[in-house]
Length: 142
Image (tube, rainbow, N blue to C red):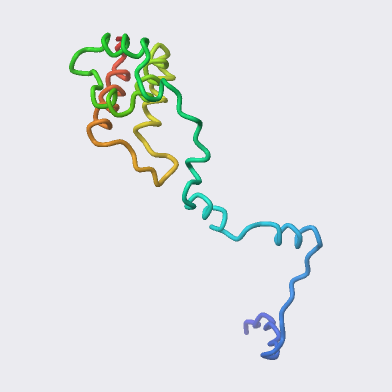
């Protein structure tokens, strides 16, 4: 005949059950924010604007090196919409283009959202970035 495991004693309805702990664990539990509370600050208006660096002249216009890089690309591959709407992106790609691994990683981070909740680029710009990524992956050194 199988034996039953001892049952847990039932507490009166007005009793409070306590867990033994040390002061360090209790203090740490009080100091930690509940799950999800820390992320609320990211939703506050102006949070990301304060975190971004100040804009520079190269954010608003193509550099000479970027113009040379764009001209050196095959005409069908030139990122016209990206140059017009996001010159700082083109400047960054042009600066990284001489290093294949670096330019691939840069394009990959621009195409794929790994932080979540990002708006992303307009479709035409995204297509241009994908085309540059595929061109770079194919091994062209334009």
